[in-house]
Length: 71
Image (cartoon, rainbow, N blue to C red; front, side, top):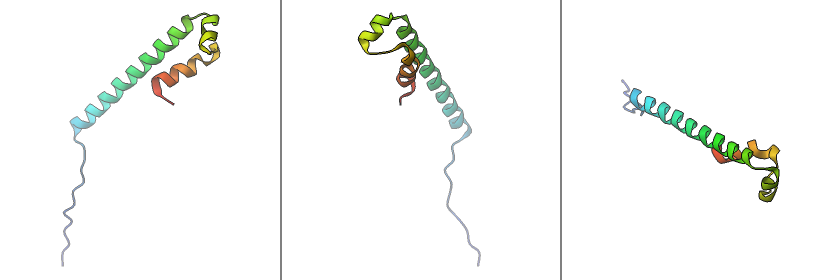
């Protein structure tokens, strides 16, 4: 007796994969822009202004990374 499998695997089409790739690139660009803007703004502050905010200059990159990409 023959057995026929009628289950279908849902696959994304080519255009869906292209759209996902585009969305990933756009998201990465936005995150990088947020990282750069945050780092630039914090680097523009004086050491005293940073101290008032409770930030040391060495942690600016970490703070910018958290702002852009989350924890």
